[in-house]
Image 1: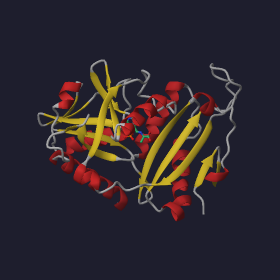
Image 2: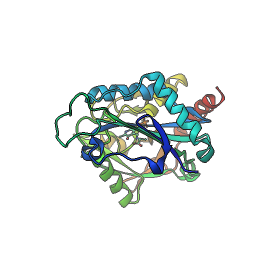
Image 3: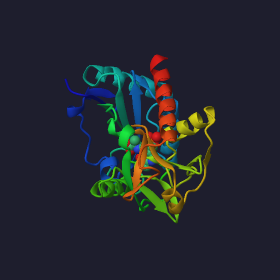
Length: 288
Ligand code: PDD
């Protein structure tokens, strides 16, 4: 049985989904996307993901294809239709593009409807080695555009940066713009510096991550000292701990930065503590 996807109002086997090559998502990367995990069939922080999607569509003036209730209904149906093949822990990917039109950089006529595509994949559990060894990261100049708060499908900069990390034997590139750390190629960044958990403030230079917000919430709830502040590469080098956060990989402890050990080179105490809070939060959603 094949994976089921959703294209413009119809559920169908993913292998049968077809779009026009004139779709502006294909031609220009003119689209917005979201990646949402589901645990025990329940979508994680769904309202927050839908709010970010709505903000992003409005920011680039792509028509909102569904109402909030319709989004919820379709996304939940995607999970149930894929349950038999993928199980109840899934990763849902959705994208909305500006639709099919003759190639022109300017927007097409207002009667052009957006293209909506949704797919599901089984949510991979993270390897054991993450908790025992952590991961390696490199630093790199942030070569992306200046609207990184928009979750655009135009990801060439991010792709090249992530591949550079892989080429260097690391899992992520931590980005530096004008002497400040912004985020990872596909993750947000936290650093424990002098006992305080710090993440760069929201703004046009980084994605307002859903996981990032949750970690700040959990820090506050559990009285873990935290703040949003700029971090310089020198501060990052001296950090006790570095974490990378995202919906699909949760919280990755970085134990090697540019080939040099972070702290004692093992996942730190603060990471272990926050991971437990995070797992507990997920479990509450499963049990709800
Ligand atoms: N990426 N920053 C960037 C540039 C990202 O691409 C992502 C997520 C994040 C973390 O955001 P969130 O916590 O909302 O997942 C930060 C997703 C997972 C992706 O591109 O597949």
